[in-house]
Image (cartoon, rainbow, N blue to C red; front, side):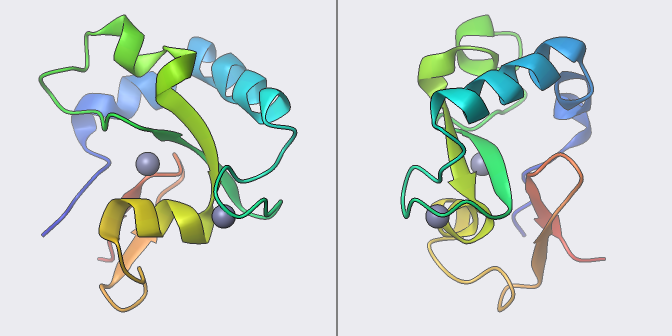
Length: 101
Ligand SMILES: [Zn+2]
Ligand SMILES: [Zn+2]
């Protein structure tokens, strides 16, 4: 099963740099979802998803061109191309999808 938020990315989401960047992306997109313009449950999404292979690539991890603000629903669609609830997935505290335990 799909598990997006893995241990390998935890240090990124916990870093001050990420928290600042997330705020920056939020302001840059005027607090609106890049897909539907929604303003609720917004999360920053990596267009090129983080993997153990690219986790040290600063352009992918922290490059603003690789980041966009999405609402929960559009974020789920982006990762799953279908409804998250149907698949038993939820967003964790980092705003990434993982399996419901
Ligand atoms: Zn949206
Ligand atoms: Zn994402």
